[in-house]
Image 1: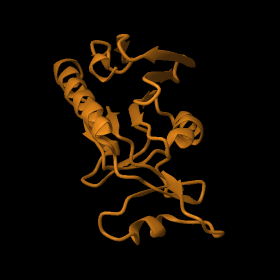
Image 2: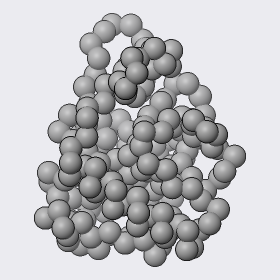
Image 3: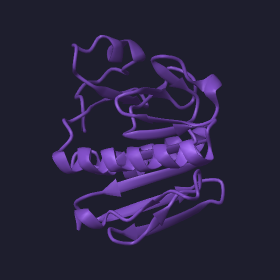
Image 4: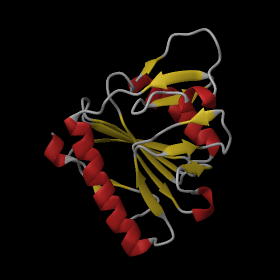
Length: 180
């Protein structure tokens, strides 16, 4: 993800003015153009979505699992606009047909070289401040998964091949073994 070079503060109107098919996120008035995801990124996302959706269906029917691209306004205002790879929302009043207005309960970002610092630094702080309960950062290059449980103020690092469990749906488990 690359920051667009400009010296003015961007707004949500800049997101809406992007050409069809071009995706970006808005953080602190800065527009971040999103790169096309890799095959590994999409494979990890597909497996995570399927497993999380199965877990939610079996154990937390009130929640919705949503895969990118889907607009998320974690603060329920226009100052922060993101499109996380995977979200779980357990309060249906936050959702409409196009957007999530308010913090999702669970967010996963699968990093690429261009988005790594944004996902580990800025988004981490913004998601915690907005009220996200659980945040996963999956790094296919480093073969690691950081799990942030913001309610318990805990962070744990896992390696591909280690089982990783979710706080939101405790029966959910990923080990990423096939990506080692």
